[in-house]
Length: 273
Image (tube, rainbow, N blue to C red; front, side):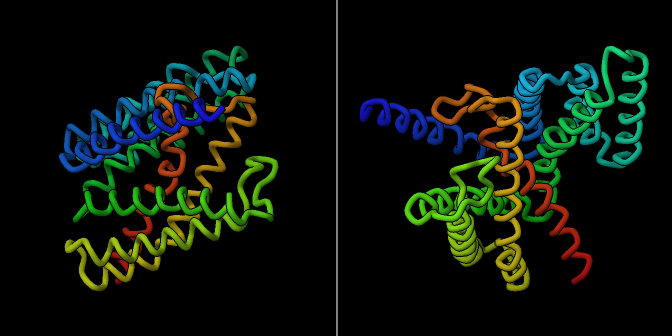
């Protein structure tokens, strides 16, 4: 048993030691490098989502789902000028594909497909969108650190002091103590980060510090959302592509909500200030 635990921990540490620096480097480079990396992650995550849908006795519309991954590189290449137009045309394409193939696919299948496109493809693409903002790399790093510290704090404090279940049906191991611990640790990390990084003004530092609890909470909701999909499909992990960690969705579930949330919240704050 001890040897098995040590092997699992070793795989997790090695995967993180390789994956995190590569991800941060590609994020730092930005541009086409980041876009290609996000595109690959989209495809892998969509494949996992299709597998989950099959195990949930729900079919996805394959062509529209895969096409959602191609939609966002096109939006990037046209410099976001027609983002609303392209999204609407994509919806029309999905509706048309569904009607032409009815009753092979049900309205539930169409809804599940659109959910996958929004949740995964649209969620991942916001990493690219956030990178385009002023000091975008530092903002992405901020979200990564808040989410990762939330996971660490929630796990550690929840394991030691967890008594009251947070979402027992979706994730029995999560507790209110863990949620609070994740919030506290993420706020501490956000505070230290804003002190260390010289890219932000005093006003921006205060804004990032105040929104840290919200980003932390949304990240935890993203984790629970993916857990509900796995529980519905009756599987433990979304995949096995990352040794010791599971699938792409298992590692990016929190970020798929936290990154878009941060992007739109920062846009609102900038317009209000």
